[in-house]
Image 1 (spheres, rainbow, N blue to C red):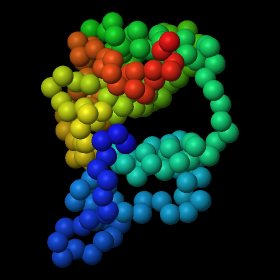
Image 2 (cartoon, helix red, strand yellow):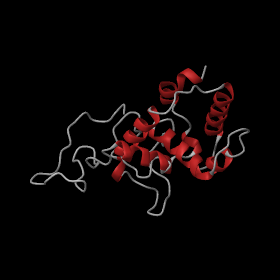
Image 3 (cartoon, rainbow, N blue to C red):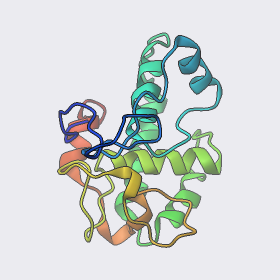
Image 4 (cartoon, one colour):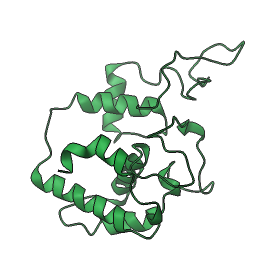
Length: 180
């Protein structure tokens, strides 16, 4: 949310706001979730299902309602190994996704690793050199580019390559307390 424009929902001229009318500023839809039941359904469904700011907002809202927990030493160690893997990779995002399964104690499936890498992309930690980073500029995620029409990966992780490395400024901004 560092670069998200502060604005009111705004539809195109002469349009009536509805759940199928995207905002002209951010591209998201109005009122995706309205009730406590909707938020619980979001959690039960496994989290972010669509590539929209509303899903991320309600996901974070739901997560913030969970009992607080702090990462343990083993968790921080796993995170350090994930970052090291990203820093030393020379392959594609898909290659890194496969390599992450070899990190000891990092229990995850292929989908969870993909979502982790996409989240690091949204945070700007994974920043493809040829594309705008959501860390420094707002990117309308609902119409962000893809490497191909059939790609399962979302922007910007879809474009990341090992040679792009890790954005240290973004890494320190979001995770600096865990890097010491």
